[in-house]
Image 1 (cartoon, helix red, strand yellow):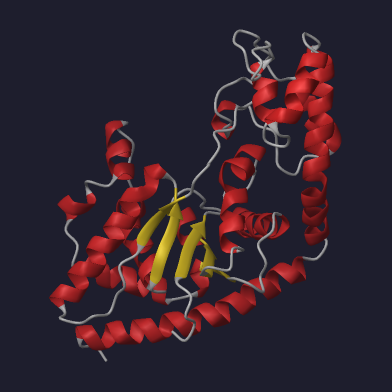
Image 2 (image 1 turned 180 degrees about the vertical axis):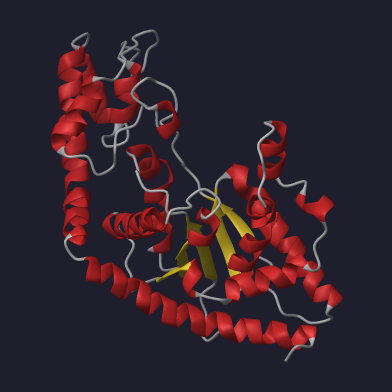
Length: 326
């Protein structure tokens, strides 16, 4: 590669239905990382990975559009990154198959997702069992230096490193760079409206692109608990409301607000509505604008496809020569 910057690679599954926990928990930090200027980012929609759970063509198309619009709305700049669909780059699945031929089943049986599914007696398809190999291909095709992941996903990068080392050793060729995991600092655990971690599965979310009325309804439904001090001065505050408020205001600002309105949970929720709406309104407006201009999403993905294919084809040609098919 001609670009001197280290490569950053990350995939986002087209799950849709994003909430503020996704944004404040990871998306915001991820966008800041890609905009830091330190890396050459390759960001892809992991639609082939999503096939393990989404098996409806219209849903896949819709959710792909939604996730691209969402990341553009929260600040990813298509001029600064290569943003593409995994399915638009054939080298991903070709390299996955090549890795399959040098990977044993007992090795893949150690993957956390497989072990979790097995422990819960779930029926496991081949895609779920094999997805670490596709993920390794996703990462290694672009000579990734770093891959941003949560601490619980570090094993994926270890598998990619093992696979790169094994390939290089077996075929006596220095083809793949060994990536490093980048555990994002300051990743927030955002509470849901019931005080548990915000999650679709708990039904306690505040949608990221909710209109003000929906946002207000969600906030007013937050369960309040004044059991422990939350402010630095030791004043009691409704913790679930305060924990969300910290996402958009400094604790110094909040201390005076929560002291002034101590015990008035309705007022504190109304202030949270104002602050969340003020913070999220520009993101929501950009998302709505993108919904009216589907052609822009198509253009971003088409440009990304061209660039990703050029890079990946150069790498897969190296691989083909190393294994003796070219």
